[in-house]
Image (cartoon, rainbow, N blue to C red; front, side):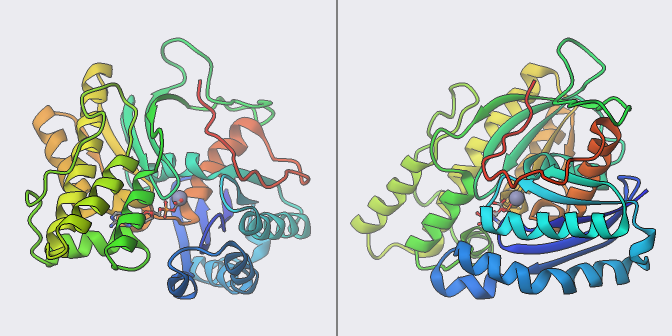
Length: 353
Ligand code: KG4
Ligand code: ZN
């Protein structure tokens, strides 16, 4: 089954063709960063207008790269939420139109569930249960991903079940941020340090190549020893206060010390969760999972603990449509097609059991 998948939840216009939820025949991502950079962040109205202009050529390129004709597409999927309402509507409306024109099923996909599934494209034999650290610009979630057939509880939002096949996964929320998301903290601190937008890659690069000392400033590690929730807004304020008090501090040292504090908390909690749950591995996803230090520390922690680290490629961590195609395949088999009047759902949550 070949699924054409579309992702337009934020500032990437993306389309992909994915076969049987496993094989990526094409994955095209057109970033709008250049349009938003002068505003220091994503401007929703600019983003949705750009999606309107970019989507048709991006879909055409995805079909061309996959070497398939529209007539060979068996289903069309798009992100239904969470995300920016105007941006979501562009991809969702286009996907419905393609599905209607080609007379194939339409599937609305949860963007966060797609981030959870991204690792499966590169690690098809991922052994469950795994602890997943989902860290993006809008979310910081620690999740236990389990085999729906094992243990207690029902499957994760198995929906109407009209597709017939059982949904294979169950998600349990272990913890989440109580204030800023990890990516939001990177973006706000980078903005304050004058490193531009998006902040995550800028801090990552400066910490790695700018010779920053991660021990230069001992920034606080909020809630490090308590539970599985996270808090990053105090850390952001500490950075601001420190730089105001020490205006001559090396920016690279601040960037490296800030990054060290975020990664320390993320890895400590993911590792403790994996140990307490007896997980087979730790998986990372979302834009912040592209961070070099986080990737390294997760790998080191998993080697030390004798479990598997699932660290998807950077392209699979940041927003893309291939991950939408995998999720659509599972959801279509389990729940059947989505109705054509499915609305955009800006606050759509993950279906936790
Ligand atoms: O998942 P994503 O592409 O979009 C959503 O938020 O859904 O994540 C974007 C976030 C931004 O906050 C960006 O600064 C952060 O991911 N990010 C990074 C890195 N690359 C992207 N944060 C830290 N290090 C990176 N290398
Ligand atoms: Zn995302």
